[in-house]
Amino acid sequence: MVEMELAGAAERLLASQKPVLTVHVSPDGDAIGAMLGLYWLLLEKGCRPVMVVDDSVPAVFQNLLGAELIKPVSEEQLDADLLVVLDASDDGRIGRVRQMVAPGLPVLNIDHHVSNTGFSEMRWLDVRAAATAEMIAQLADYWQYDYAKTGVAEALYTGIATDCGFFRYANTTPRTMRLAARLLEAGVQPNVVSDRIETQPVQTVSKLANVLSGLEMHSDGRVALISIPLDQYDPETDSDSFIRYPRYIEGVEVAVLLKSVAPDVTRVSMRSKELDVSAVALQYGGGGHKRAAGCTIPRPLDEAKAVILKTLSEAIDNGL
Ligand code: AMP
Ligand code: MN
Ligand code: MN
Image (tube, rainbow, N blue to C red; front, top):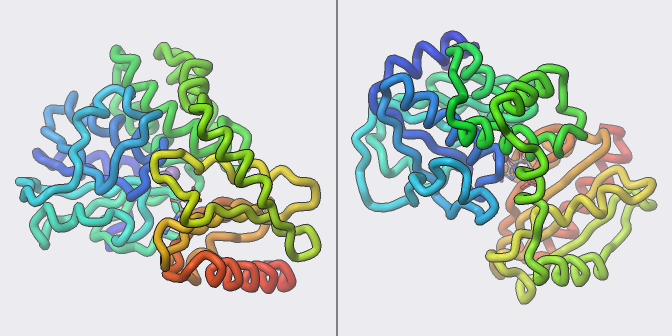
């Protein structure tokens, strides 16, 4: 695998005429924001990029500039000369997009996950970046991109802000803030971005009340867990933010959100203060960052819960 920095990745991108851009399934603000930002940068450079995601774009990101151009996965074979995989740390995370391009197509992975598996021929990995969108904002600076379209800056700002909890998490650095400041100078209104993301339908808040009523404390109060059983799971309700509540309970080291998405499939999200939860997620085929990670366990909710609680309690005892 060829490891690249900003300049090398920039050069490789420009050598491509028809890159396909993609991101991880269940795309978040960083995945969508980084992909849209790169799309507009490359278009301005004379490339003809195409964006594909094996999932729907969450409603809160649908009004970002160019979101309607993101293709869903299909039988179509795309005529491409490069596959750019953004914000995804392993092959499986892009779902069926791989099947839409020629098997031998070169892959450039642009990512910031510490759990990155090195699956691509070329990789620009920056684990110090708060977001993949922060890397794309660096690329914009490198190319002296003129943010005449505020929408491009807004997509990148959305990516950066969502992955660093609006500049509160430990991954926020001076560089994160400097790049975000550039995006504000380009006309981004931070309150508009955050209101759009934080505003929920009333049903979501009712669901939150319900989920929080099932809060469980484990490992002497160091693990707080909430779960969404199958009969309450609704893919249309955005429950990703629910984990912030157990995370901020006094004495809690790790917060866990379990979602039963099918009878034998449980999606696990973890947030920690210090414990390396990406190492825990990796044990179950997932990944992420030190303090924010996830995995999908092919077991019913109760079994997945027992397994994760045991692993976490051991990790806490070992001081990992
Ligand atoms: P989440 O809890 O789903 O918000 O994910 C937290 C972090 O872990 C994000 O950076 C995700 O990209 C990563 N992550 C979540 N699930 C997986 C998975 N199954 N495989 C690899 N990384 C994951
Ligand atoms: Mn992401
Ligand atoms: Mn990210």
